[in-house]
Image 1 (tube, rainbow, N blue to C red):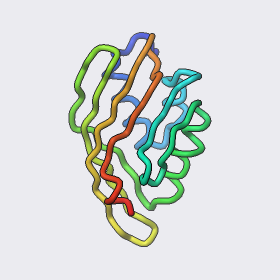
Image 2: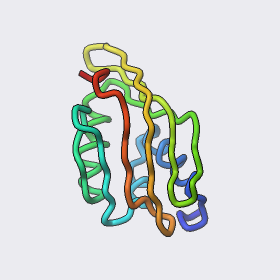
Image 3: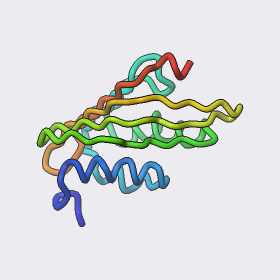
Image 4: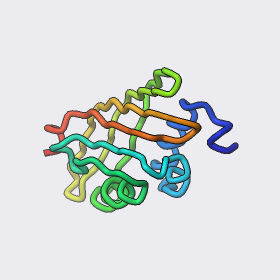
Length: 128
């Protein structure tokens, strides 16, 4: 099934499944070339990134390299057509063995089967 054949909720589901399996290439196919990806200031990956490569370099690779474990577990998807909201929990273990569970809300903006904008909302104090 191609991105064009998936619903926007299915695309968001694919992002989580692929990330948790370490399959970044699948996620890259789902991103618009000019994606805007926003992580909150104070978060370990804080910043705004403007390309799939920038997201991989500043968010995905550090998440996979800097933590013993890092999973993103969605609990609920809210379908607003081209606007998808996902509620869930980050679950990580640091290299020092500290476990972090942090709730999140992710907002996806989609167009023609691609993610054009992504915003992560989470409690950054839990990550300090």
